Image (spheres, rainbow, N blue to C red):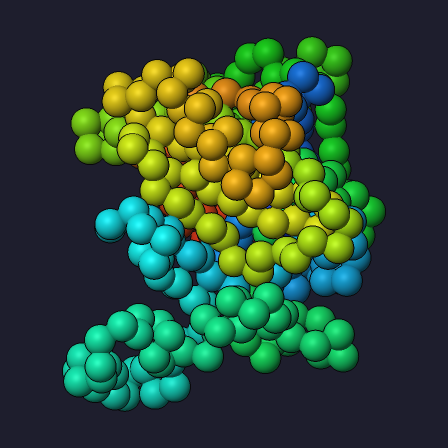
Length: 375
């Protein structure tokens, strides 16, 4: 019980695995002999979903703490700025029906109740338009900072849109080359347990036993450790979160110099909503919907109709990737010496781009409050 925690083993790569590995390795000096050793085991058969993803502004601090160059990150991961979200046609369905959720807080937000003053204004101006300078920046396609601004500094608060597959590859290179994370590409076939139920080691197909003190389950929806090994029940929320399916597409721009929206666009549909994320090289667009209230054919028709307004008949030739969503979460995230991060612990709904920020918060908490020993 008093044995020092010296080795963290992470199962699964992707954004969850590599953000967790980088957060722990950077804080606990994994590249040093005296630091905490971090090993990440990733199956060679798991592929990325491959759609554009949005972050919260918290990602800037997460990457900065890892020692990531923002310039390298933006160049290598197809990154664009995200200054908030635009919600379209959620009330009346007309062209005038939209509002922005910007990342900049109004001046004096914590000191003055601006709402009552906004109510006294003539009708027609949204609250965000009235109290925040970021909305006109988004409408005019302006950036939240200058090319001369220091890395991670901001004129207006911002997060990122990024290519999730390239992001995982970028973090893998950074963590292994600069932070001392040990990488094993192999299948985890079974688990060895101690008498008290702790995991002592993972048995891999080609690398034998991998021993560790703390095991982090980042194996996604397969949930190898917290779900399959510890049999922690999954609590489904399908009764209140109807969204259970997504169709995703990678959409080319019409022209090389087309404007890139610096906000996520979320457009309501009959049985769900469509996300539209602008990357420098393409758009990541998808329709999230309830299969109880829409057939796949109807969902595809709605997505093609949406895309037709921007790319015309090219929408007919696009292939859609179907993604199943099981909204819910594990009854417990931490059992014995195993903690789940990312989709292995659960997933709810992508509307507020909360998946990555939940990973960031979990990884930060683990790294900041890493137990000294098993006791």
